[in-house]
Picture 1 (cartoon, rainbow, N blue to C red):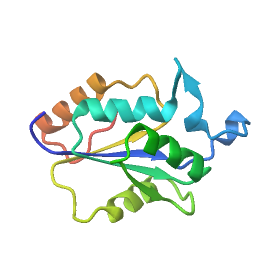
Picture 2: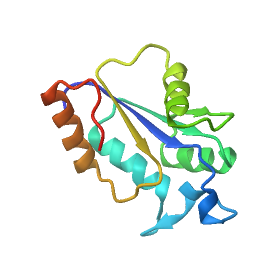
Picture 3: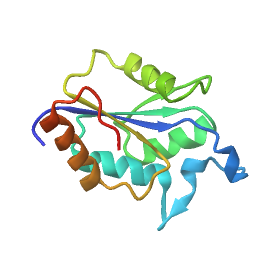
Length: 134
């Protein structure tokens, strides 16, 4: 993909419905954590910058993200005040306003592939949409 993509991976939520002492995004499917699946998908899109928003169990989640790719920008959402707030926290952490497409995805959707996200970005660009939601 030639034009710039900035990816924001939302991994700050508590996942209370799972009733687990472990952060939801650290649970594994197919031998890999949920956050690893999400980060692989955005890497496969060719994101030039990836920002992961952490919050609940931030030390463990941050450590897992760093182990996967130490170049990923990580920001802390101190208060989990929703998706829009998490995206704002991520974008505020960047040194400059992102150019091109901003791709926002959750860290707890392991079946969302890089191919699907690439097709989403291409469709978004082709349609010249302000926002595209999958």
